[in-house]
Amino acid sequence: MILKRASLVLVILGLMLSVNAQGAQSPAGAQTPASDARDFTGTWRDWQSTIGATQSTQMFVIGVDLPYKPETQDLTSKRLDMFKEGRDRASPHLTCRPTGVQGITAQKGAMLILQSPEEVAFIFEDDREVRHVYLNQAHPADLKPSYTGDSTGRWDGNTLVIDTIGYNGKGQLDEIGTPHSTQLHLVERLTKSKDGRTLTDELTFTDPVYYTKPFTKIRTWSSVPGERLRDYDCAENPRQDDMEKMTFENDWFKPVCVRPVKDGLASDKVVCSLPKSANGKSSSKATSAR
Image 1: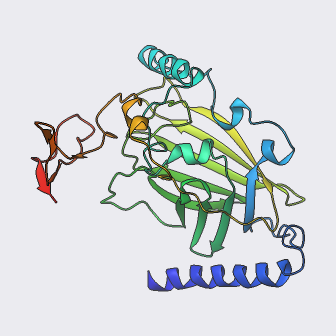
Image 2 (image 1 turned 60 degrees about the horizontal axis):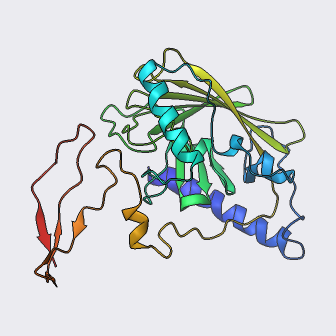
């Protein structure tokens, strides 16, 4: 494991030196996409935004024609109406948690890709998330569910095939809240164009809990040589009324620490309780902390 991390560090250092050397005179235009079809290293951005197009629903919604089960159709329609009305619904993105699949399908900022022989790392500007794809490895036998899941990769010609399982079921597929469960199995086929300027991600979703059959969507990225990822502060300028007006469909994203007020006086202690699990049960009793 130490050797693998060291390899990735060397790749990162090499990229930094390359950016500094090539970008000293013209950071925005000195670099060119790598000629190696298997080298995805560099900065990429949603294709729509790089051609000057306005932010379309493609950037936020993976589709409204998916093979929904009846109950999924009702849930998605309700969430879509809320989205159109501009009503906030608690989600991983809005509560500063890892965005998981949504970070792939509805990413609005730039994406930096770094590679080593053992790993491909995706660094997203939005939410400052890092996704690790481990090459030529099996999923761990004791896999612990997470928002991002566990991703393994292999090469099929010049296409990187990424297999991801192990989701915790608290995430969503896009900005409006298209759902997925813990049984989601995501397979991606990532291919670079011959001129090296675009990256096509073919995503196939299989989730028997919410959908009647697998479905495939396409996401396209454009190379933006020299562009640097900016800071992203998810919790910048938080407002109390943001939470008060937010719709919580479940307790997963609700604040778990409050300062009780009795007879007009605030307690000198903050009372905290662990968030509820996916099945709606509290994982422990409430605790107190100053």
